[in-house]
Length: 218
Image (cartoon, rainbow, N blue to C red; front, side, top):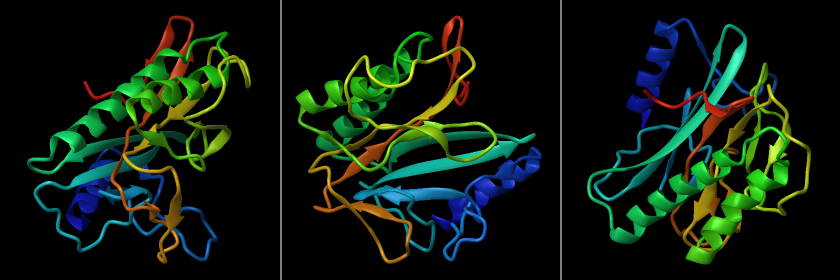
């Protein structure tokens, strides 16, 4: 994990950008100590990269925030390490698909609840759960801005989306129950039942032509 973190730091620095997570939040007793978060298996988000060696069959969620010319972007993907079971592979596919369900709702004139509810309405009939305490957020000059974007809710509710808004949309999906807890490192969030989970995220701009995925890899 530590090697992945160093690779990310070197690439960000090479292009004149700044890691958004490193040292965040300023002045905190427990600022985040790395460039990326690396969350393995039952770790939902905010895992701290370290000496852990990834094993065949693991999954790892890599989340990275970057500041470039004063603007923030945020993105995450969950990758299989080697060969994973069919159940785990399905978890990854369902979670990534739910992200694009949410992106499709990032249209001017829609409500925030249309984005949030699209994830829940897609994954729960398939037997999965979404975390209740965490979700996406606004993106701009700061790492986390309003509004909070849960992955559950009611369509037609919440603020109306307008052209020029930018969001980080990030489904967090669990095989087991939706309860989570924070480890003693003050950052790593794990499923309470230690069932595995996945996390996908893109930064999205609402444009007159529909959603623009700003963090999509070419």
